[in-house]
Image 1 (cartoon, rainbow, N blue to C red):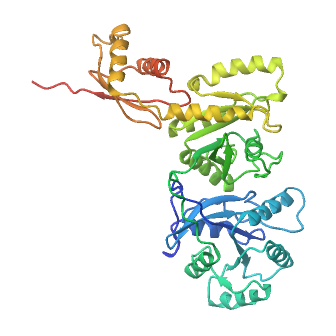
Image 2: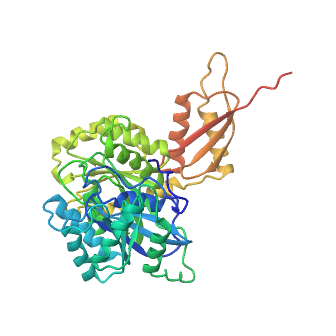
Image 3: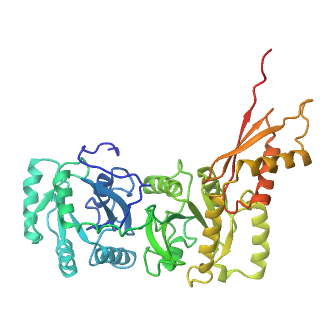
Length: 459
């Protein structure tokens, strides 16, 4: 199965499309392994939710933007709901219950090939107590014979079961029409409401450095499953959080453990989606465990953020566990390992207690400001003229390339085009970047320098 196998009935939205106003929320719930994430992927039209042939792969409630028949709604995928769960599974069930309480309507997914189980009936009781409208999806109905079996799901007392095949896209239109009928119409936008959506922040880092704890503390609730087992978060989790009087969209991503080509199963897709989360974001917050040495994986994530051209903030977590000796060695590591990103704002925090997390917003603001800084062409060329006269390019093989003119065509990240009489050395490019930062700031953002070498005219 590929993500393009869907019936033409299934329509998704681009991950970067921001809704222009408040949209209704649909929670997708059901027992483990009934095909919730496959169904979510079908509805949104792309392979986002982690799908693997074993229960418990989705652990948090994860939001996606979707639309059908011109109406936008938010889809919340949840972990498998087992009423008798204990430990980590119990917390996953709690996440599903929270999702239902926050939703406008519920899509209850049942495996039609198995029929009604005790767990399904227990879930129905909770759904009835919630008082939310429920649409019943009888999944894994791949043919006429199974469609007849799906009729037995009337006995759940939730109304008509809609037979559907998440795998093949069968029965899509009827199900989504029923979903729209259950969802309230979005209210009109108040006059003067700004359109564009909240700033997007990706929380990235190795497994178990405290990314989910940080998001929970920022959100002020147990928003993400936190466990000492490394790699508890698999899906990227979108959360709208009020900070500093503004709304931000945080994306908590799966811990990057391995190179994508070395990862397997759901880890492989989680790695891909972490990269996608960075691409979707405007700023990446790299969370490092201050107790541990900066590792190759940390540097690799930094490289991914830089190559994506995203703004960057570095958060050293678990600072309450750092003693004087560790601080000394950490400073040496920062000088050695983070030399390529000296421009990134750094904050020290303790996500568990919330110590100094109020420093995150000023750091994000600084990084976004740098990311969107534009220099006028006149000011840029005055700067370049002074730079070249004070520090001309070294002579190479009897030739000395000169910068004739410069311009900044785009921001986010700041991108400069230098028109030159010859190819500039990489070391001279780095020197120009360093001086640009000294003169104009560019805190928290990579800078892209491109060269246009003037062709010599043939006589």
